[in-house]
Image 1 (cartoon, helix red, strand yellow):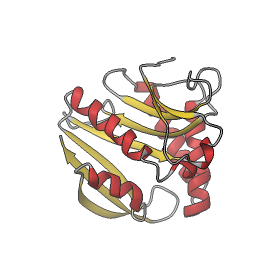
Image 2 (cartoon, one colour):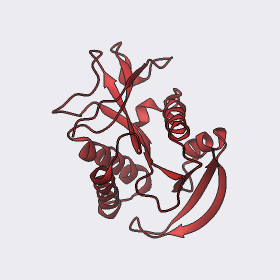
Image 3 (cartoon, helix red, strand yellow):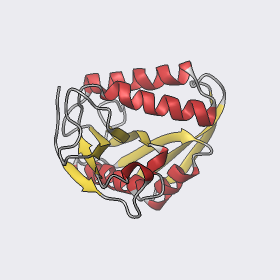
Image 4 (spheres, one colour):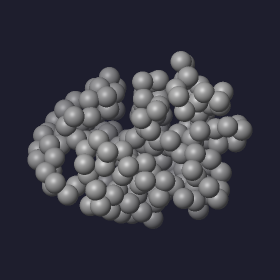
Length: 196
């Protein structure tokens, strides 16, 4: 399945280290070959280095992405990927090595009517601090509103303050805290909710 719904170019200013070659970033929507492995690898490497999460974490991410894309419905669900766009064409099959971040809107996996979940919100550390997280969030919230969602939820770890700051800046409200165990070791988690 190759879905290439739309692409927006983003040139952060000042240039992030990953973009000193003069290229831009594009936010594209949909699945391309290799995407599940690429997002899993990006997150697994980051969370191993910064949170000491290992094989169990990587397995949960890979399984969740696989399940999401097996039920993925264009116009119902959305998957936005940030790609390093060196030639203006974005990330094309068969390689997806230029993917640098992601954010999904998951409606088909929710049991509560009108509710969508934000999942796999991640940007490569070289892209932090340039407004890309807010750009991704704006796309996701806009998609949810356009498709009739009434509420958005996101679950995250305590300590991911930049991401939590973005959620709060978009109007998400902290609704729950608990000690999670699914990642291979106990981690304090949070759930935020946005009424659309």
